[in-house]
Length: 200
Image 1: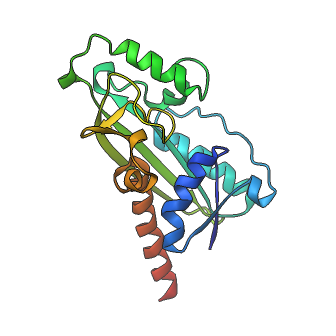
Image 2: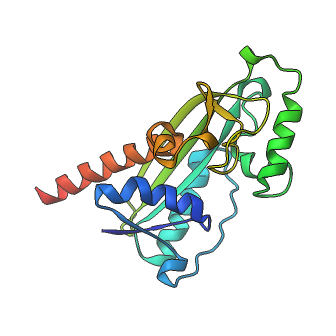
């Protein structure tokens, strides 16, 4: 079955495809299908609300099952911020350099043992018949003291798991432990179960 992904971020699309396609799911962006999806305003107060908003809109406009993810970073020393505002933490949507710089500034006086954080990803899949699947994945880590690595995107250069940042890992290594990888594997299990139920 073909699925459309409600994102304009090709790095995110590639990450989703890398994890889902080996499971027999073909995923496309609207651009790849020659469609234009509304850029949904993320007005939800939780990752789940935002993922559902994007997934429902994409499904309605494309007529295809639509997968949408909302994800972000929760830093304990900042009371869970930036959370749903992760992409626009520094005020400008998607400016990774500014977001990372502001995060380091906010944590300048925070000692190592209190720099705990987690990435959270909630994925929603909406079907044309109105059915929905909602799953969440988490990856625990810490915030480093300076950007490390050339890979990834967003806060990856600062998010440390063990002695390496996400940006220092290969795509495959990151997928094995990342919040989005965990959420997508949970989604794949739900999709497989759904398929089995229909096949019986």
